[in-house]
Image (cartoon, rainbow, N blue to C red; front, side, top):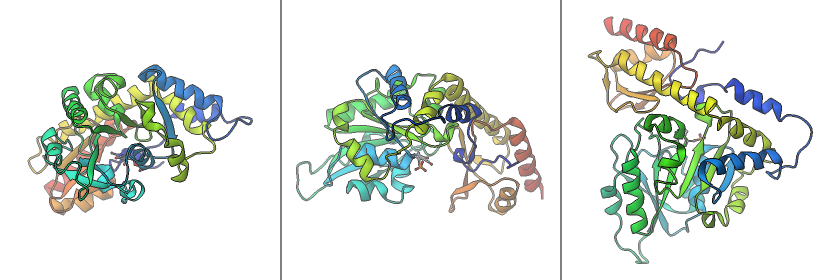
Length: 343
Ligand SMILES: Cc1ncc(COP(=O)(O)O)c(C=O)c1O
């Protein structure tokens, strides 16, 4: 049995009901590339959640989803504004820049969140051919630092974007964790809050693979089918992504999984917050705990179960909880942490 750790919610396995959904569609032949009834059914599910006026594209992974979302609405002379710790800026090997041709402009953040002030600063030299032209703002929900934008924060950013001719993209690789944290339905803090394009993730919360991009204005998706194919994200056996989403969008999976991951992050936070050598540096609002810990114990603790050092200068580590994290996993880990601190 592989031990469960805190390195990444991507390190977790696949929820049994998702496995079951994959097995259930694994019979006979259906038309490839998304023209099958399973894909239609999954798209219908998204329409039930977000309304009929949407365009839905399934892709293999989160990087592909973000790139398709951004590529669909930009030209190479545009810029994309995002936080300096955004996955699109730091962790996609430059794919958004390479494929969109756009300049990504990193903005300062608080707990992974950007603000209107940060965006405003870059709304200069508009219509000037010497400068890239801001076109899209991208926010991550929940953020790369475990924070969650409030409904008001999203509405403030989207209003500012639309007042200034900008589109708002949301990287929702951990959208379900944010939904649970906010106590809101997906639609409330995305489409209804003014988000234009949503990367909808499930892999970190119990799926095997696959992401969706939801365009709330189908006009924005006019050329997306070509970009998806050109960028090698068109899955021939689409039924296996669709079947996962069809199952995942049942609250028995997405809600239960995200509730567990978020609750376990709170449990872990409560277990370490009063240890004087541990400094939790971001509010624990979703499923991650970010803490500065003594450098000397880091390697030994990583031998117990692996986790990443997120900021090597400050020795800030990231402990992620998953849909399958248990209190026993955390108790064992914290026990070892305390032992090492005593040495
Ligand atoms: C915020 C965020 N966006 C997107 C992704 C998706 O990335 P991938 O291409 O690895 O599926 C991740 C995965 O770590 C992420 O943390």
